[in-house]
Length: 451
Image 1: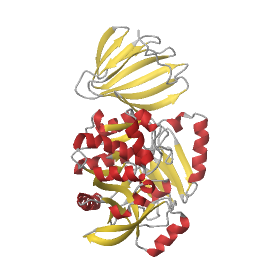
Image 2 (image 1 turned 120 degrees about the horizontal axis):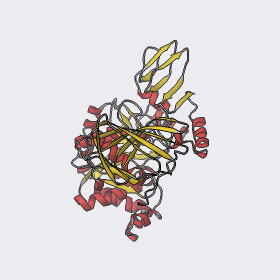
Image 3 (image 1 turned 135 degrees about the horizontal axis):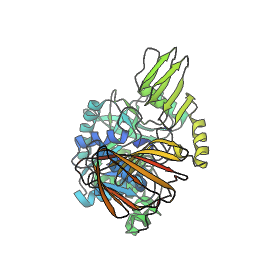
Image 4 (image 1 turned 90 degrees about the vertical axis):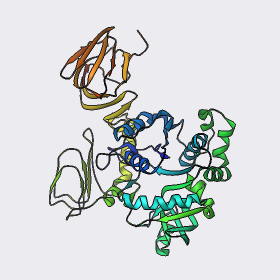
């Protein structure tokens, strides 16, 4: 069960309001969601993704990109965001209907980074073995600093090799208590990767969080149930109340991070001889202690302890430790409706993806990728004209009812006010460059009411 309903802009410009961090490609070519899909598909018989309804096509489209097949029935859509406890309970109801209540489940957060896959596989084997013996088994890492916002697990006696009982679970203990835990030395951070039998977790949630479970019993419609479901995380709401049912699997050198800030990304990445953490094309002279994430060439001269993030349509430059100010600035920009804060250059649609390449006054250039058998339209625009140039594949185009077949190297224009539809009738992806020109290019200039 992959939890992919998170929401936020803490890693802007890589993450946006409509493109949260689990789908952002922070380091390398894969998002953390895609990494979670790949590692889960390697160990599981079946996958279930629990996400927000607004992220449905992102979840399915990014799975397709890494060769993981997700049917629509494998994606559970939450009508509203209610944190991890309702997400897990809602997912369990679906799993139990499909596989029975004794099915063994492993939960993966989709917004965490893990670098040591072999250590994770070792821990998962132990975690699943413990789950089969009637425990909720959590993969954990040693704390590296007194982080007040994490979940802390106190390990007790070893109950089998590499697996320990839990004497206490504390979610977000605060700075002072976290410092005490570091001194005590037998506490671990929860990674939120955990294994259990479905029936056990469902019973724990029903006992400890009736305000989560009862609405699903009272209302047949998930939309109606979610209006009454308590918003609560699984750790503080349920796990912290049943330490006797938990076990812990400590790991060494897991390379885990929740990617809660750019500072945490810096800590995770390897550094060069001047303590710069770099992903992308970067050249520097006299620069020290910087984090640079870029898809284009970036040159640094003489700067220290800076964060530089270039996502092609937006750039962030700030000193380390100023994340709270970034949060306030993003809230201001959201209030102004600035598109680069709301939306990413890449958007996922039922038919494929749209990547904005260039935008200016009166024009916009995009790359459309239409999956085999998919299409868009019929529709028309009243403020723009379109021109399509096929890069790969074959397109079936209808303009005012007239059909055309265009292939690589061919193009077609769609005048303002003309109805059109586009379909990929082939066996490979259809890639098209779209040039839109007009006085108004807002996303609401689309008429799909019929012709």
